[in-house]
Amino acid sequence: MDKSKVILCRCEDISLDELSQKMEEGYTTFEDLKRILRVGMGPCQANTCAHLIQKELAQFLNKDMSEVSVHKVRPLTLGVTLNQLANGDQNED
Amino acid sequence: MRTYDVCIIGGGPSGLCAAQRCAEAGLNTLLLDRSPSLGGQLIKQTHKFFGSKEHYAKVRGIDIAKLLQEKLTSFENITILTETTVVGIYEDFVVSTLHHNQYKKIQAKAILCAVGASEKFLAFENNDLPQIIGAGALQTLVNQTHVVPGETMVMIGSGNIGLIVSYQMMQAGMKVNAIIEANDCIGGYKVHASKLRRLGVPIHTKSTIKKAIGTDKLEAVEIIQLDEHYQEIPNTSRIIPTDVLCISVGLSPLHQLTSMLNAKSAYIQELGGWVPLLDDTYQCSVPGLFACGDMVGIEEASSAMMEGHLAALHVCAYLNQSHPQAAELIPYYENQLYELRNGVHGAKTLKGILKRKEAMNAQ
Amino acid sequence: MLNKTGVPTLEQVQSVFFNEVTLSSFKAVIECYEDIPCNPCALSCPVKAITIAPTLHSQPVVDPDVCTGCSICVSVCPGLAIMLAKVQGDTAIFKIPYEMNETFSPQQKVYALNRSGEIIGEGVVLSVSNKKHQNKTSIIEVQVDKALLHDFITIRGIHHG
Image (cartoon, rainbow over all chains, first blue to last red; front, side, top):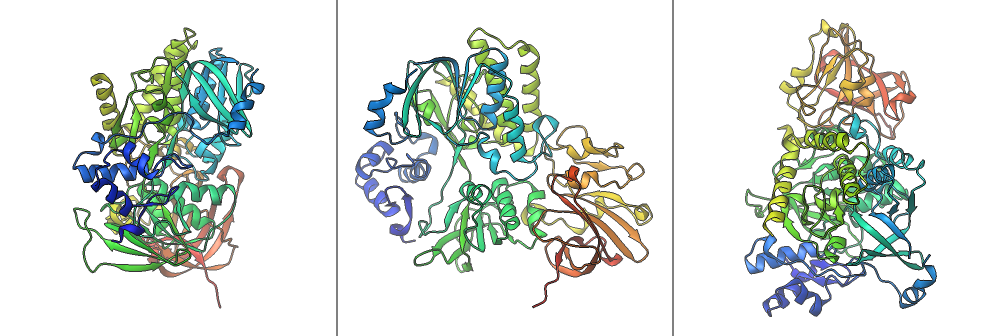
């Protein structure tokens, strides 16, 4: 299998090859990988890649899926522009 | 900032049933959904549903959506906002939303999350070629926007969704060249499979996709056979030409909103992945935060509806404004859920629910 | 077998069929071989000829002495697993549920297909019903050779050229 042609994060175009390299380098939590590869930070906010990357981590670390951490979730779930945020209080009733 | 007694996030089958019960109990209810129409996944389900009368058996999904919405029209104490995405929920139960270009916050005393699930994806070579699409997305494309993406397709996954969507694509005039299943048995109801077999659609078990083939877009797929350890059996590869590859390998609960409030969660494979943990009243580990439907365990629309009713009844009790018929309705819906799950197909869900309970008690 | 292929065995089909004497008038043949939570067939039968017991998951059983061949269950079944069958001389007549795009008209010759989608012969359409209560599931009456009684399941149009 050509790992460079297997895409795990569609939003940021990250392949299994890149992920494997980073895991080898010691980035072995989703949060680490997110910071170094931007996986989970695109428009879908990890909807596509979370479980795929979790599976790879579990295999790499020889752990059960339930022992692999999920990514930290914070507001906002979507991209909201600063303009929209700034005008927010005009919409309050 | 307006305050509501309960903010129900998600207007699919679960949220719609919950909204009805909250409104009936006199709660000042807000129902939010990011889509233009209410109904969640129901509005794409052109097939007739299973179950019993209480589960709207024999009614087409699209019609169930209408029936559920109609139950809400008589209430004055319910506000429904569509095309409104919840972008954040906060410790003090402020809910921030985005509606078109407008960012707006509301205050809720209780929050009920019923946001459903998202499609799982599959990792294989060239999986980013154009014309590779998830089953739910394909259903939206064909059943809602009435666009057929190609003449032929291959379906990966023989669970109910894979089988139902394959059938619907045949109805739309596409030709399903093959349904590919990694396990040695068909995953969904056999009647769904039989409907496809009589139309000449082959179902290949113990098979999976090795790679997608094409330059600018998908042209074919390479399918291989698997042994009992799900490993490739050498020299079993064959190429199936196809315009479209549809992936239906399961759903992942959308736990993001409850996770945002640090509600305790666990990875439970039987329920589809990460789910918020619940007590017996559908409440998360954060008081006043409730969740139900597919986001707490992948199941069906029928169970989502029953859970929506139950969670709402408990939300009312939490807010000290119990529903007048709670004493009859709670055991009634719990019995409905029991009936739905009391069979071969429900065993996995029951196991998952037990794990979810144990995890909640343990943490 | 059914679990792996989606096609029931001949024995399974024969187990839900009735003998030719019983089939002298239309009777419902229900091919629901799996325990799933579902009962609209039993609930919709106006003469209570279908029993689903002891639970919602039990497979339906038709009482041929009670069944009047009204075809309500044929369009109600969400799994399209019910058809009516009748033996008439050396032919078999079926009423099958149909939800595909092809339309058929009476006297039209069609291919007869088996449960694997293979052409096993030809048949002729006798009638097509699209009543409101069928909720967009057509019921097509088809006549085929009696030899196809346990093999026939659906039809496809014959297209030339």
